[in-house]
Image 1 (cartoon, helix red, strand yellow):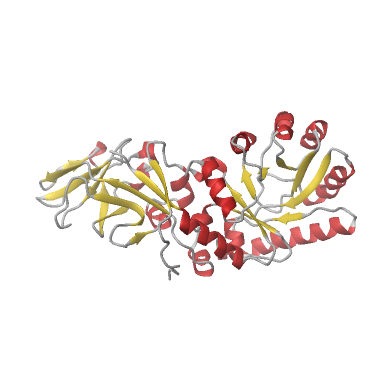
Image 2 (cartoon, rainbow, N blue to C red):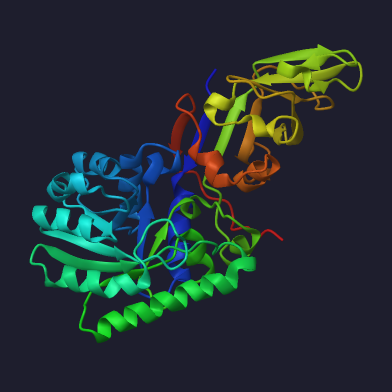
Length: 377
């Protein structure tokens, strides 16, 4: 019995256009397709669809991810955030643009050159990037090398989705603006400047930067209510399954491993859904999250198993085996539970939920008319 992730390409296209209209004129959009397109899969097909929407550069975490697109004949610009020095020849052969933040990486890529470099500066994320005071020397080295071209200067925001961190985010932005200005005053030239991820693109669209890197926001997924209010988008992902079995329980009958749930009354109906933690529906959703059945909410009861989860369908009229179960997205009655809402009920974020979806879930691309833009209170 197949569970299915439905990817609405019409909604994605409209979201891209809405994001573009929200950004300063001329801002370049990098569609980040790392992690198997954030778990959605089929990155080559997704890239082909996205370039029809006017996206002309794609971002990845690692060289091998980008290689899949290049091997499939994708000619657009490809960017890699974490290129290893020992992959320099491979990256050059694939004509990849790479981020760099240390002399060791620069010298490795200089030997394989020519290659386009985005100088990555750490303004507070403290993950990758050189310190601001190190950037001038590295930028000048790149510009002086005949085999290196300084294609961009970049950084990464740490808390741009959350207003509680706005002072810190603005500090990161100001550090980067000052660095860009200082480099240009020193005669260092580069076409692209970028700091914003999805949340930054939604909440901090600044004219001082001319490129943004967007990920799950393309699919209508936000990290915060504030993002959704500022930039309402259309839901493009729906995860569905079907009821595989229904059990009628007496009061105090237990469900699943560990007996963490017991029926509160006689004639409690518990349905079995063929999705489990192998499929990315982790145990954190046990006895907490809800799904949609026939337009009604049904709570996950008992511990989520590797292959199955159980839901309480008591009181749902005429429920039967093979009925559709909507985990997130829009159900057949037009009701919606967002991926963000479902993830939050398990104490996690939509990004983790989506990227953990397993290979047994069928991926289906559609061109269904997208619903109206929704602003959640």
